[in-house]
Length: 385
Image (cartoon, rainbow, N blue to C red; front, side, top):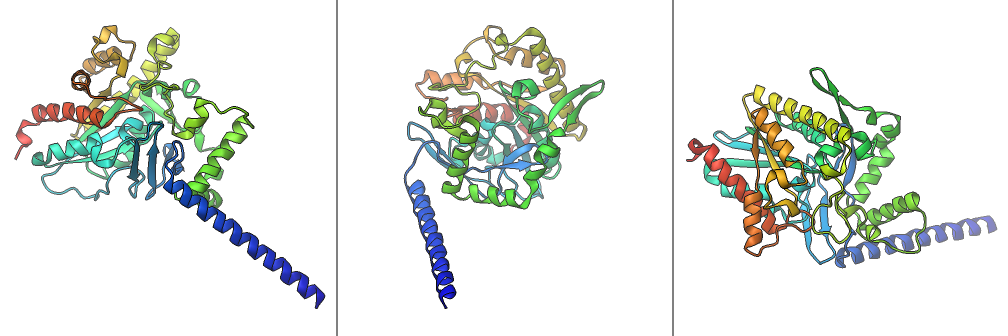
């Protein structure tokens, strides 16, 4: 009888503890959802055997910055912050796919304010449907790999690579300094893909326990916040002083500097050794060229849509510390269409509108979309109904 009494008390204590923890988690979840704290968001990043990382399907992106701007974005069933799209294209429809990194993901604004949704709305009389495949941190190669998975599946008519100045460096292992993604390797006929990231170091990421973890952090702010703090603790130990980088945590763009409204100069070509710069250009050229040739071999069109650096807008290409001049020369040499929206963005700035603040603002998306719409109406004049 006494043994039974001890067991009963133990079970009651366990139940009480579990209930207390559950209530604490629930209250914490409610508090984090009601109080907008910069840097607190769902951790929707998940492992991908295809690209190394991606976004958890059917979850929610929450963006909050230090000045109070917020946005919520639903991630569709294939893992991109865009609307759902049927695989079968409607008759007479022109499908445009945008591939790129955080500028294409565009988590800083609501879906209706993104450049790709604005483009579709402004080209509705042309029968245009836009699809966006953007994930923060993607390199040129990761965008190309993403196209290879979805380009034919969605029967895209125009494939658009949204080029950002940090993309070339993301194709080079020693510059990216991250072993968890694929990298391009030059060959005599183009490139091969080094998928060694799928090896022993990442095999565990497909385990059931990690899938549960991804599910919980993509849907719970408490689990997401705790997991982020544990990662910081394991990487940096206990810090007595919080830095600006700590405040940003995982939400800070990889190319942003503290207090900067625009991309930093860390990946400016002038700061790189000549050999490294030339190798980066060769590798990136090979990826873009192979990508464009693959698209055109299927009788589809390929376009490079350039995202200029904020500080370089208004300067001639040969006066910029950017990849623009190289990109212009490369695209011209290989007859690849290139669209530069600098004029539209500069025009918006001169009219007093802010176009950059941690990527594009709503006005930035408007100007970016405007440049594409103008180009499309000239390039596809017979498509108008």
